[in-house]
Image 1 (cartoon, one colour):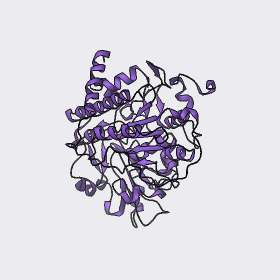
Image 2: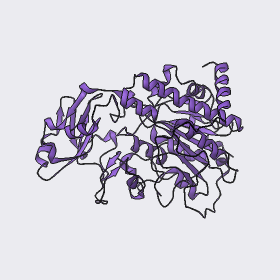
Image 3: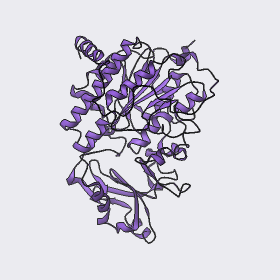
Image 4: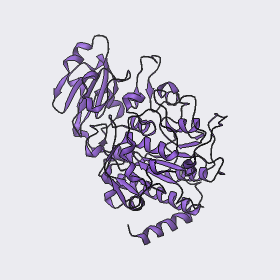
Length: 437
């Protein structure tokens, strides 16, 4: 994008910062909400934490979406910051596992959020659902990992979550100091305004680490497909919100102060009504308990169903079934107690389900993810911008576990044990760690 056009965009966005949001569907006030009850922090964050760090996720943002000419703000950030060749998700390439990986640096098989829906033999009285606030707010489902905001709080800093997987639970006894329960009706503009409101706080109250989450690109991709006009409109919506964010930072003279990290949880692949596979065609579906269906199906056998489930193991037309012990090692998945016994992977672009699950959903998705994390269609952009990062630079593709050690380094906190490598992102930094005074 030409600089003149971007400056015009920033200028027009800046004028809107004072506009009323009363006509939006936002149910969250722009006023910072201190929803955490944790107090008594006495430690002091290191010097390098004085630069606020903002982690942004654009859910379902496929890596090549930035090539459509619809995201000038992202293009500007990439041209004036550093971009990776790609960001590869962990397996399975779905939302909850990968968002928790970004803030823990652990593969899903280690942090325990193995899917958006789960069962756990140590919590037999319930099953986890991404739609059930009672379970998303239950720390037992999250405590196998420690999110970065908890580590920051333990180090004497402050964090804020404008929606993020895991932030609604007191993980290891702590929420972020500021957080909101997820509400899909809160539009992108209001989410940005809440982040800016946190940055307006006095220096001794302002969060050091902030997360910002956008879901509309993923929703449009599922409902209408990755090549749809609806998805293009969602890209424009989110990019415009990011332009508003940059304009807000500039108005506050924070544009050269905040380090911005933009990532995603996964990409998206076109599918449709003609690419639906039913487990019912191969076994009695009443004898299994399907925990997850879609790009893969994960299920346990009910009494009397093990023989039929075992008979399904192996390769079939457009899908392959295995026990969790047989999942290839490269997926780093299958050892956690929450992974169901049987795991069937659909071929790219196909959906694997049961007729009952399909009827409850009512229609086939037009876009899907959860496939092999090596597929390019599952990869996302990774763009960093701010005083810590080189300008107009490009690094090789990275795994999403590599994001966490970079974030911890930027915040100056000691990372928890993790699966990533800081070395994967060092070339993006102006000053390597060993050269810091």
